[in-house]
Length: 179
Image: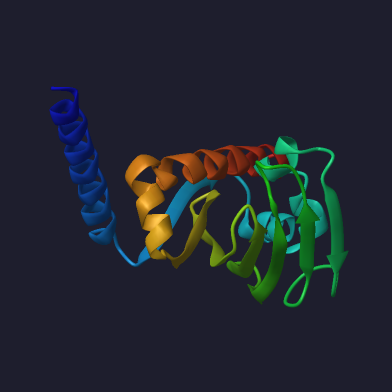
């Protein structure tokens, strides 16, 4: 009897694993997380708050997650070639953010290269679109979704997790820009 129950339990576990693997295989090969906020300020005022990685630390939600993290900057102060490196706790990991495109006052594109907690290479894009007396700022991240990431997405909603950080960051950016 116990042998039958054990075999049945192993069979259920095998079926559960197969279901998870099939669900993961059905996920897209690329992910994208995006959030937008309307900020009552001209794009010309908001753009430097994003394009200067020294200043963006003041509104980034990731800075609050590990105030003790090690940070360094390099390249020009702002614009294409500017970079920011960090090494922090398990919430922020370690990596490098490099501005790859800077089109004042409408767009900043960055390469995000994480080394910890796992290696990944994603693209961050900020777009600023004037709308009346405000500017709609969109923060987006996209990148490849390797199979292991797809398995994790079966259990964790990356859009919600990262999206909350983007929403918090945009709210802080809004507070800085609307002063």
